[in-house]
Length: 324
Image 1 (tube, rainbow, N blue to C red):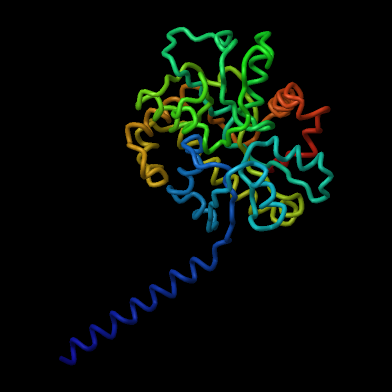
Image 2: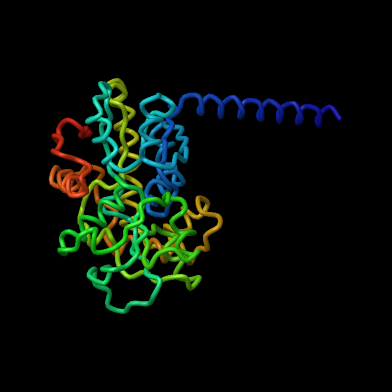
């Protein structure tokens, strides 16, 4: 009986010590909150970094908060509700041109192309952009990158907005349901939504806006200038974790990636995740590095100017922080 009591006592001490060690390790990590513009397979490298423990390895306790809409992401960053914003880089330009003193700077890209696909209500074997003439297209909100990229692609093919109907009144979250409900001939959808619509027989993927629109810092991480200046080591560690995620998606097959990120998409079948990842790999959506060029940044601004959302370009050096 005495021996049993000793064993129980030692076991209790071990459990207590383990709890103390765990709490100490957790308290040593830096808590970072990120406002995520959408939850999509498009951002697979980020979820790989999260589930493979790359942030933990860098001493970061990461909390990702879904914050639909780039405008809401920037508001959350500017207010201090979160430390880092994750949205289209165009949002930082809007803030900068709005006169904000502690404006946002982009420090790492995760995607280098528009991640949405053109989905047609009818099956089209050899799609051409000219087929959009006279059609009704659900394009997304005015000033958002999917809609602006669409306008840019149209203009490069000598098609004006007057040649078709582009519906910008439907919110990003409701574009899929509106299309399924019978609105429009075409719609821009990200994965896994595009594949779901096709598998359910409501439409057909006919083209990638990313392939047609070219390379831009489509989705990237940003923070207030003051936060970056005061936390350069954190920015470096965060970027390093993201780079590991990018390396992983480039060095592994879609099935391996899908199994890792599946907890993020419990309502999506593994086979659908694999299809979606295959789509993004095929269109070269994910960059090799978190750094992006001045050329791609200026190309994004060309798209914004074409959509009448920008009158003149903002200097690359003012809005982009290069990790050293």
